[in-house]
Image (tube, rainbow, N blue to C red; front, side):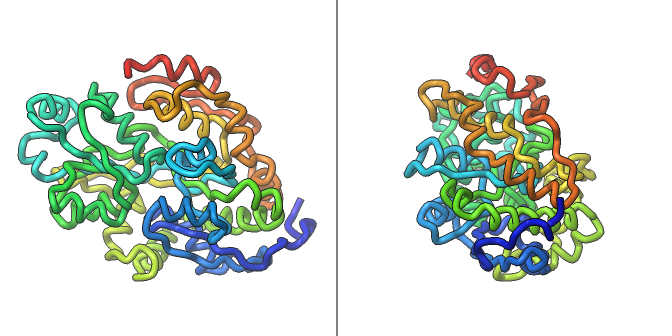
Length: 379
């Protein structure tokens, strides 16, 4: 199967929304470096201020597609935290590359581990506030999982608030929050500005976890399947380009532009290539840095990846009862469209719709018993 045997996309231009984060790179590269043209498509970029704006514009049709939080797509589809709308995941854009940042005030108080944070919180008269980027989003789930793994109840022992990624550092600097979970480069920026330190990366929580996805409405996917395939093919080419580490220097220059991330190149570049400085005396080359391709294993929309988010929604009371986790994932994750695009590019498609992962607490998630998994947690 090749692209020449696929008819041209129904639309010649699409507008894809993005948030200024390092992991918007696949969409930016596909558009700015011309990968889209090969597939009869012109990708126009639309920089958005918040995930709520991405959600609203995707629902309204102002955006054809968007760089999206995995959990946001599932939350909207389930009617959690806003208008219910059937959405679809066309592909995963990246794995890894997010972080949890704490304030320098906490560092000065001797907090440099989850256990020490637990002790510190029990000594405070008032609850501290931590920020995440969207109520059902990946960052909320990584933050909650990390806290709970250290016996800190994210709904009882702290307060949480929603802050757009690019505003996280300013919010931390002002003292409004004690910490946050967000994508890069906003954890690196806190270190650079000397207002915070990285206490954990998201890959510490779950090695090679799913992160951002290419999201569309289910209606769009049904009306314009050829356009969806063309978008996926262009972005897969971009992802393959990005996984060559030598290319990330040039892409860092691109992403630093004022109309994209609008941050100094070095702040983007170091963690982009897995070079970490946590701002608390530790430097390392991460063995699970942000990945965009990995022979296509990053991009396949595993049903178990989507199902994990619905288990966490139930765990944290966002869903009152267990849904049919598998049926929801089968509806949202458009494995069919992804498979057609990947096969046209001769990219290997996994023969299993589930994958197995061990998270930071040693618990294995493989999608086979979502209700049992959800009920296995202390809280």
